[in-house]
Amino acid sequence: MAIEYKRLTQKELDFFIQMRIHQLREEGAKEEIDLAPALKDYYERHMADGTFVSWIAVDGESIIATSGMSFVEKPPYFECPSGRIGLLSSMFTDPAYRRRGIAKELLSRVIEDAKEYGCGTIQITASDMGVKLYTDFGFVHNGNFMQYKL
Image 1 (cartoon, rainbow, N blue to C red):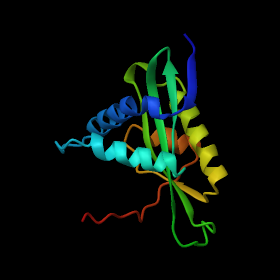
Image 2 (cartoon, rainbow, N blue to C red):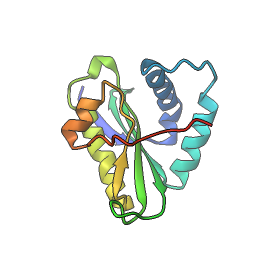
Image 3 (cartoon, rainbow, N blue to C red):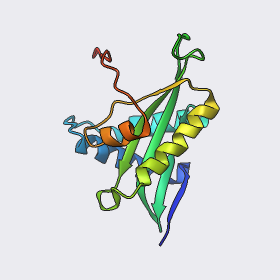
């Protein structure tokens, strides 16, 4: 069966959330809280107001890969005069479907959405597995990225 690419809708949201949790665990997350309600609240609110978009890849009835882009705005700066930034997340492909160009296709689609939204830059905290995909696509490392946990 051919792989189909489509926008995430409310209908696929519960399965999308389960894939996101699986992804976080695969990337080493150890927290044992039930993250599903918070994810559902986030995705429902931000899909409704247009500040979260996602493309999924489907094989038959199964979602086999996901992508996500959250749009945020901060004061404009020289490298991003619009102040609009795309935060890439939820890039995950079922292990049985990896290395077939599916993630690259999903990435292309959410980047187009970011361009349409007016984003001047896209950021991601890449997993070790994802670094090659993003580097090949043209992403560059920002050595000054830091985080402060509250």
